[in-house]
Amino acid sequence: MPVIECDEAAARERLEAEGVSVQSGNTDHEQWRADHGRATAVAYDGKVVVQGQDTARLEALLRGESGGRVHAYFDGASRGNPGPAAVGYVLVDDSGIVAEGGETIGTATNNQAEYDALIRAVEVARDYGFDELRIRGDSELIVKQVRGEWNTNDPELREKRVRVRELLTGFDDWHIEHVPREINDRADELANDALDDD
Image 1 (cartoon, one colour):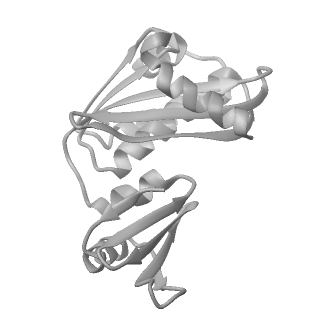
Image 2 (cartoon, rainbow, N blue to C red; image 1 turned 45 degrees about the vertical axis):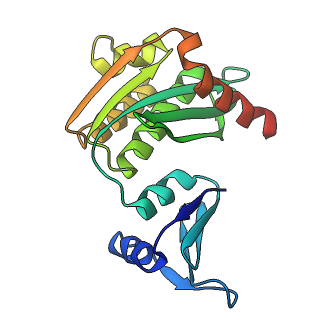
């Protein structure tokens, strides 16, 4: 559960400027509450606590950080191909891990899960306001399709590739590369942990 030390009034203004609805707190100690996606921010004197799932987007809005370069690692997992599936992602900048997460996505093939993990990583990098994105994944198929080196005959994968490319237009600069599985182990671990916890 992330705790963001900040001026809670300024944090509220940032959320409202981004169109997030902010309500009164539920107790005398709560300054305000805001729901965004599957996460909730609760403001207290001098801090905001973020809880729930998918907290990275809300954290980024609250911190008001933008610009710079981030490295995004992504991995998808499917048990059964198709079968129960999950995604994992890690964002790292010069100061260390910015955000990471893993979540189940229902039933999918491994390639669909890989694409969903990439989409999730790019969305979180966008929400944090980074200008430059360096993407790393251990799926050669996904990397080469996103680069345009390989085509796909699968209509669903083609749609996901289009979605990734649309998201990438929001960055000043981006690059995607294939890396060995051991370089991508944290994203893999997060995806598999999400499946194990489901």
